[in-house]
Length: 515
Image 1: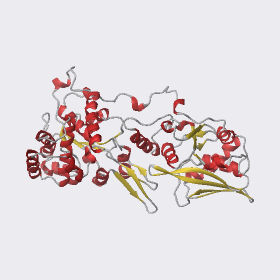
Image 2: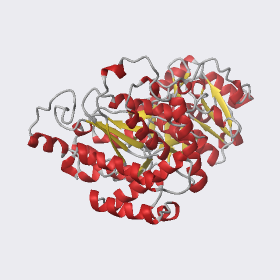
Image 3: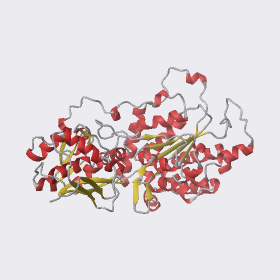
Image 4: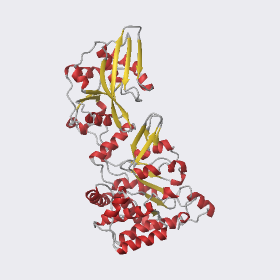
């Protein structure tokens, strides 16, 4: 009789149940794997033979067939080593496991040649899928236990470090379920450390800091424009320190993404701080947006609920940047292949930095620009108008006087103080509409952005002056609403609209060719 073991396959950022069927038949020794498996699964035979031999069991010596169902679903990775091996032990009669235990359990893990069970990617999304499917027990490598510690109260989790220990757990319950409180907390999670760059370490640039606080408070996209060396990159990297920690649900989603992408290591727990991704301008479209034969998340997905920073924006290939337009607008990446379609979340704040010309010094007070007018126009046109229109705030970052750079006095508020303002503004937004302002739909803007006659008149004049598109007008309203939230008031006043307009006016100053 074939043995039936349940495991899982990661699909997008979710997981689906996979039935591993193993049967040992009469015939010449052979080992056959079926069910759309990749090279890593095909190689599981060799790992299984060595692990069984070194653990005191008999390896396959007859015709053995392994089927991973559903057969139409592509499967990849080494996580099937454990369910295939347990299935063989049951099918060959070397191990007897109660039927109800096998039917109510999922098994994942990679085998070492010595019979050890190693860390695998995707443990958290698999555990969450197991809970949704009503699974009672989950058997996984011990190195993955920190990743799923927060949900140990919703499913029985058995973390094992060897094949022998796993067999003992399945047959005589010698291994107790893992509990979240079992971890002694001896190591400090990387997400709990102090921000790498504090806002008060950056001298001057109060106007740019204010703009980034608005971006953080409302989830808006921002573009920093200025000569080289003025602190654009430093400001963007300091932005992580003013963002609130991830909520529980956000943390599950972000950690699942990083687990699938292979960016979590053994011993890492749930991510608490919002991600900050800064890809090089040589990144391909698949690296930035996601893709591949078996679609993997790109940088925009890895920045979900965090910040995607594009330094030297015009240096990115225009075709690559254009593929970001839809994910920025929709908060979702859809990767379509002939056999299937995968959707990845991509609700990230886009922050970019650029020089206004090839040499970078047009408009600088320190150095003269050496570029011709045509050079400047060609450089600025590397970014399309529709792409530029997706930035809510355009911020000029100018040179800081030497006296201010060399001063020992504190420069503005710290990241912790800014973070309190951002947290307060976001709490107002969640209480009012259940999401940040940047995610408001046009119909919701009419409900929440109530304008008095003076504000309405100013907005009409602004549309004519700056030739704002409908999207640009809506984004202007969202920024004004965020400024009002930072001030703690319910209605948009003229001063809120005026401040939001300043960031549109700066685009006309820095990049006049687009206005």
